[in-house]
Length: 308
Image (cartoon, rainbow, N blue to C red):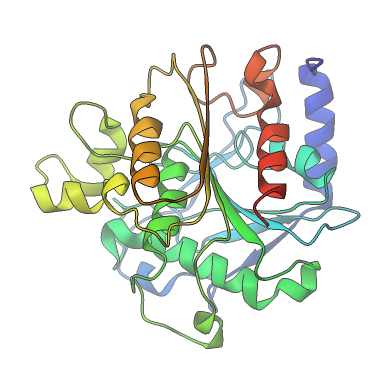
């Protein structure tokens, strides 16, 4: 696969962002569970001189989905949960940059922001999952507007956003917020799940320390560690899963994907895993260029086509 230049990627992202629309999925904009939080919404441009589109946001109170619609929808939607160490959401690096590639194959992307577990929301560590459940239900309830099949909506998560996605895939039936309207009558289970260098476990030996701190604090109870270690939450209803990781990842160890793969296999859940020798952490699409793993979007879309 020919590597794309930064300039080419930048132009592709600029066009995608210009066509995108952003909507709130909670009725009042702000999530009901945010009322007692002292979080202050703060954009982080993160411009490094190499990309105009490297935005991140912190202090999220009114999570949203940004819709990247293709010219010719194939009927499949993907809820995207970007990472950010459970301190921010990197909405371009692991969000908007995906749109040109997935839109070209007819996929409709919904890149979401979500509340942070350490920001004092009513749901506590379940705030990101509450937002993901509500977003999935909102997309399903309004699927006709985007010409997608409500039964063909999956989730794609990166890093700590991979933990959000895997939480949705393993805990979709859990009640983590009070139902509000008929949107909440929709199922929250994704049709499929794709996890890219995901945070999965809170185990001391292989877990991501920053995510563990944000989720359960500095002195967690054993039950909390188990509750948010998602390899412990897999059962036969977990959706088919695609896993991608670089073996040389210094931030989120490849063992996160390995333990999840083994848990899925034990429960008989269809799973496909791709491990690449090089790529480190946070490669997304931009930093994958020139490496063998740059083909991952095509690999994932080919896999999805066999599952829907």
